[in-house]
Length: 435
Image 1 (cartoon, helix red, strand yellow):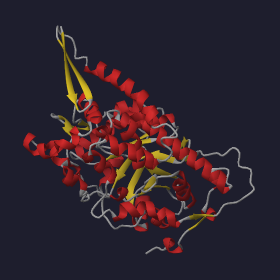
Image 2 (cartoon, one colour):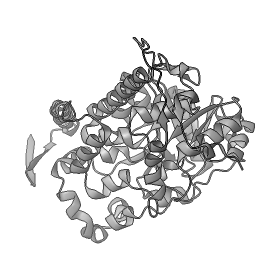
Image 3 (cartoon, one colour):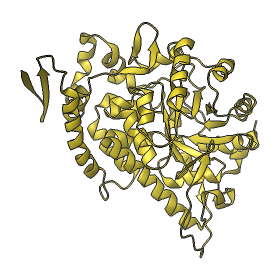
Image 4 (cartoon, rainbow, N blue to C red):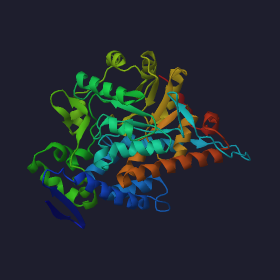
């Protein structure tokens, strides 16, 4: 016997089915059918000419997500000075093209940690991705693999790391927070190693979470972990996005943190990021036991000074990521593209240098490569696509960026990514200043 309950939320009908006679709940099958229909609509939603750049994806994401989720994705710390400057600093770099050169075809490939990727951009770790779209980390990783590039899985993720790895044909790295303590972290490291993750990313800029003022205003903590009465003032924003709410409920509601498994308790509940990070400080000393647990390459993320870059090299980092956490930690620090020349000079070619922060166009990627980055990590750029249309949205974001990179190289008169250097750009010389 089966009963069907139709729930009207705004203009969207949510179908809930309950099965009897010992049958398993058909909700997963129903969710699959709904997602299949959504995939067709999603592809149309992000197709050209409706979507031609990353800002267009941001606009669709803002329309689809409740304010609390969109602002978590879109916002930064304190006055959001660094958030804005991350993007604006790219405007201070101008190109110096070579004309009348045949650049057909262009070779966009590069190698990062010994793995070839189709163009010099990987997907950065983005926490709470499953709140943005039920496909979450699996959808994003799959799109990265389809585009020929890599994906970095955040500890603060709603899908099991084994499923994320199985869902992509590209390289996958695991980004480690020490949430839950050393024993929990060692368990995650072992799982990542057994699943075939190829690198471990250690984020060093989160001794506490930055003050992201949009989150408390929107009730992020209350909606994730508060009691019913605490949630009530913030529920209206969820009801105003019935399409998102339908997919959220069909996905089971607030997910658990599947990769933070506490012995004897199971996966940790999804919690406010401030609470998660306040007990997860990473120090240079932690790298000793992390290296004992992880035999592969270690990437240090969150480097903003030449001094820390040298320390990372001395600690054996296979790569470092010049990052200010997308302007979400200490507000008022330098934009990452501005400190990139200092970091490149400090490591003296002894380790690979990646960067993130403010990348919204393929021309931004090319500028970073010209200033010495091996590749960039993109976070919000693909997360807007994920929020807008799941796998299809991430795929579209990567298509846009790749086409931008190809077009920029052609207009510069440079045939390969490997051929880019600082002679193709002009930028303020005080960016080279070291202290």
